[in-house]
Image 1 (cartoon, rainbow, N blue to C red):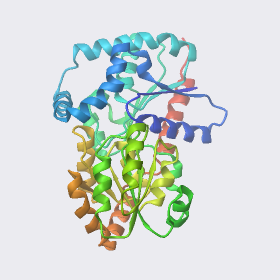
Image 2: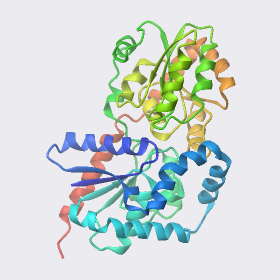
Image 3: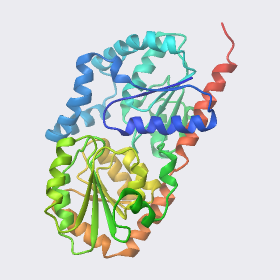
Image 4: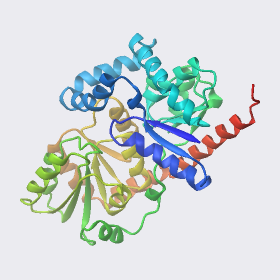
Length: 377
């Protein structure tokens, strides 16, 4: 039995858990798997703040979020509050974990990783723990010396963990796990027909993540100023008010626009697109790489999105655009240069790790076998 602990901040952490879960089900169809929001076991106040307050802070007070993130990144000691919260949540998890009796616990967010590190200190019957980091940088909140395995995206992240005291043999460079269907691309024309847009028109995919964050309305207006023949597909996630607003705006625009809410088949939308315009969350970025999709990173948030942007920009697979007014010339430049688009697709192909979920699943199996081989006291 494998327990996945995620966190209800956006959709990426859960998507990573589900990708590994699917890979495990392919390998072990009779196995049991649970994907759980770890915030359910934190204090009610923290749950509300973490799930809802995070969005408000990054949207309305991004510089405050940057300050908090940077301070935590530089900290050399764990705060008393964080220690208490991890301990509190570990105690709340005790009955659930004991009843479920998982063979391995996989954490796809830093919070449950810290909680399970505390759980392991508190309870001698703790199962093996694996942390799966879902960005291209590893924040210190992830780092605990008693986690049995880490799966990270890059060699630089591995070195960061080693420098912070994690044993080298516990760290695997796997990439960020994505659904295997991102690597199973049909033709652009077929993918466009599948999502209900014109098959013969250059397609721009505009995304705001699962929560619809970002200046999507202004970005849509910027795309409409292009002289190129394009169509836009906007995915707004769970933000119903924004979905209604953008449908009203779309009716007034020159270029064709399809507005979609929360979707499960993101891979079909990426396969249909020629260019992605989005915020550079770790999962979105990894999915774009596997889909070989040139990426314009629109107004990245401070913290992990800023770090992801640097990584992708330095490797030539993404272009940073800091405001919607700069989006029109950036898109015009790309659309006028088929060679640049092809080079970005080629570089994405080199950087992508479509096998990441399978690699992580194999590592989880290794922890499973190791536990079975341990003598019973």
